[in-house]
Length: 189
Image (tube, rainbow, N blue to C red):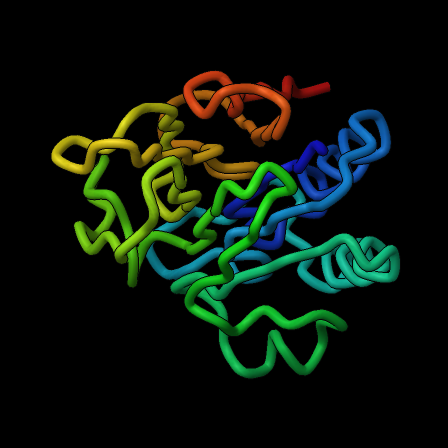
């Protein structure tokens, strides 16, 4: 089973369209959206082709497939839930993969593994689990220090990367935990 993981679209229609094309190519079983979907936030510049209404339409079309799991980012508001056709206001969403591995999906501002200014508030997770989060706009794919058997994965940001490259992530449940996550960098056209 394959999951596509994306975070921090921040209302960019350009990057949301690129993400939808990637979803079409990757053909994941599920799409995990880690928050900050529509609004750019007061600390960020406007992303390329800022058009939240177009992003709403793209995400609602994707949600019609029934493959979307989403969590609330620090930029989500009640109005976002009013316009999106899938639940997006929970602080976390545990996803159980067919292997039995738990992926604890969150944005990174309430729960996190402490990397790159994300909050250091790791919930109790069974060994062999992963915390999957966004928020920092910086890619992470490594063990959580001080928490044996727990992995951390941040796909980076789709539209406003703070590490230089626009990206999303792929999770392959058939691989060992240390190899199951990978980053896919999206170039500009």
